[in-house]
Amino acid sequence: MRPDRGAKHLSSRQARAGRNKGGTRMSKSSVALGNLRAFVILVVLAFHSVLAYLDALPASAYRFDSPGYEWQTYPIVDSQRWQPFDLFCAWHDVYLMSLMFFLSGLFVWPSLTRKQAWTYAWDRCLRLGLPFALAVFVLMPLALYPTYRVTAPDPGVAAYWREFMALPFWPCGPQWFLWQLLALNILAAGLYKFVPGWGGALDRLVAARRADPARFFVVLAAASAIAYVPLAQAFTPWSWTQFGPFALQESRPLHYAVYFFAGVGVGSGGIDRGLLAVDGLLARRWAVWLAVAFATFMLWIGPTALIMTGEEPAPFALQLVADLGFVLACAGGGMFALAICLRFATNVSPVLDSLSDNAYGMYLVHYGFVIWLQYALLGVALHATVKAAIVFAGTLALSWAATAALRAVPFGSRLIGTERRVLAKAR
Image (cartoon, rainbow, N blue to C red; front, top):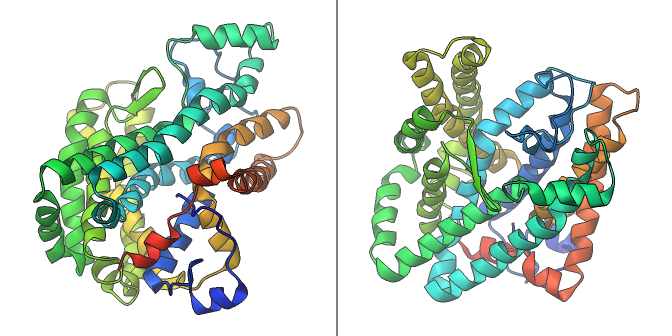
């Protein structure tokens, strides 16, 4: 999700030829993955846009100063609800972030071999660490003011700042993804520097499974189960911990590491062959992966619903089934998303190309637009679907425009540029 300095939109001739902004012909797999990045940012914006309208929310908003601080997940609670939004969020919560770690890992190995460890690590600190700090310490206090106002006896800015500074942590919102991704990138750079053979070992581990999506699915789900299930049993799947601005979902850090390094392994062999080939088994059998995604999601949501609605602590066996259902649904949903884009999203579109190029910046800035728009609609007598549509459309337009404006400034372009050239060369 990082854009090229000084990049402009594709011309129509370049788009028809499937070329990047440097004139290099892009592979169909590169185009498909770029379009998948555009799809992912749309889902992220939609996911946050509907959170205020979930049927499972309590009747009133969470107090800003109440221990537990559930407003971190649901910053605005509206009286209008629509139950299908619960299913939408449940499905995307299962696979989407893991897919983002996988996609981020795809281009690590080409970048490491081109830049070497120290340069790569420094570049990651600039591209991930500095935007993380700016988004968390500048944008988040602005974004969360409406969350405070809905329950505050004193809605003034000074009172808000006192309450904000009294929190036992610094809220980071969706930017938790950036610091964990940065940590994994630094780990990859360290391994590249001090354990020279690790890349070859990872490549050999993945090589035999690149061309066979079913084998890749089994190995990915098995590795994820080893990483996820013990932590989910120890901490529950839902618990978070936070130290300063660094939030962590306690059951998932090793699970995300599995997906990141799975992406590194797949990307080390090139993205135009094997698993991500547009004429490969994954793309050709997209309908099978749709069925797999649906079946595994049902395998997770069934026992999870029983656990969440039960009054007594769930039996160990039921918890175990739900945890295993999660790792299967996560792998199934990610494989389907890859399959559908490799099969149907291989043509360059100027709109999707722009959305893909701006995706990283939109991820950084969108959360404040979501919260303020949801807050503005609290007293409006509209159905939840209409409110969600307004929030989504407004957030999409505002975050897209804000990112484009930031990229027009040299410093902003340096921070949130795109790796379109890497996409074209990683083959």
